[in-house]
Length: 315
Length: 312
Image 1: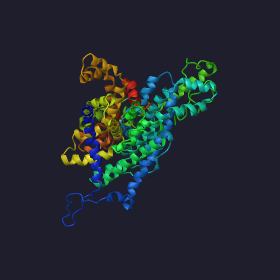
Image 2: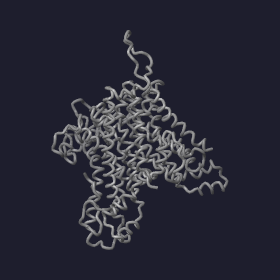
Image 3: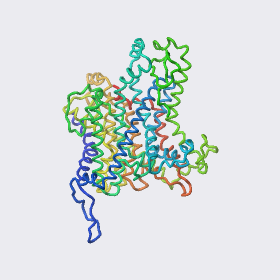
Image 4: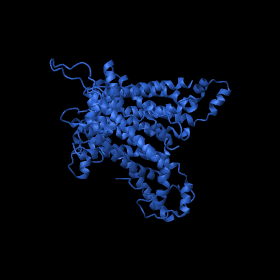
């Protein structure tokens, strides 16, 4: 009965997840077809090269990979930190604002609802050399050309779109803190800052951690924003997703698969480390994410069933 | 930037504006009224400022997109807050059939709609089983499904691209729908599972006492009652599928099959002498409007769906 009900999902996920991942690992062991020196035609079939695609990143050809790797890490790190701080602030503000919740909530969903591709275009227009950003700053910055300013542009656009999402999740966490706790703290003489540090932040931590985890995993696969805002193949903002996609679109499936496998392992590692180091309150998600790929069958240490559906807000 | 500090103060220190703690007590709650006389105007002002700052953060860039889309192409570099002559030239340009934008909207609807319907159909029974039945490997199944939502889309796109090239699926709808299931399905399963869990088990029990089989109880009692949850899940799934870019840009290179986000990102303008910004903004507004309408009407549900699991 249960198997009958569950199997369609497993079948589909097997087709669109398990098969591609195995296939990626497989094709990462192959190189691109050589040109036959005599005829000048492309030889049929990709030659097997073992782990060469992976070891290549440590040789001279790895420069582009490492650049993409550091770009991914840098863009993810900075934007997630900013998103968390700003999103938390937004949640605290919204929690205060009692009137007008409905329209504030509607407006905070707008950045979330705008397709990333469209928001990238919007920001490209804002950051145009003659656009509003330069007018307001009274500067002539070429935001969308190579360089640090391009990274800043990407981070600003990313934070704009996702900080409200963090705010929504954290606000939900704030709303379940009971007033009595604050009353008790006030009776005990705790000032406002003390109440923020000793009550609000610890109590909202589970929701905050979930939000940060979602954002981390999502930012690590960043693609559309730099791709449209700055452009494909730009050194200063090329992420691992962009690099892999670029290689694949040039029919270099071997290296592309290798990069995507590395990205997957990187995401997995970050998620695992994050959950292990910080996830004391994240038991539900910990087991889920920690047991990724079905490699692990940990059944113990799971809070109740009701802690589990935490993952649905991948945005 | 706006909103980096909580701007609310408490009754005890109305002047200390920045960096103070939130005050969870609503007015009228015990303690909220005690000493409010001197603090109230300050608090209200600061609260209002904070809320306005949050709303401005969210809406200002969107507003700029709207304003820019309503300028005449020749005024596009104006920086006035409202276009002097409001012009719909950009919209007319974008909707011109030669650009294929309308067709790309239809493509987006087909891809996102099909993805949503398929994901819900597959997910609903699975979610019900996960929420209600006990079976071996249930934990493992849950684990597997949540782990899949973590996958970088590019990791599955590349192998599927290779596969689809082989079987001639490039430039087809199914080449976009099938990979989209990789994120739509886990999302739908998780959302629905948490929704089914919230429904009281007595519903099925009394239905079965009344002579329903398990299947009948599910079809005739649970599904109708779960309609709001299905609906919320459908909205979230649709928004994600509508916003998808990487799969759509990889699987399709024929313009007539491109989805709206992909096509718009490649706009070069009606003529080569006019910067395409105006048309892009107009197209952006058109692509976003269905989503903003969804948000306006269903904000409560969307927020509930987004946060359902995060705080329980």
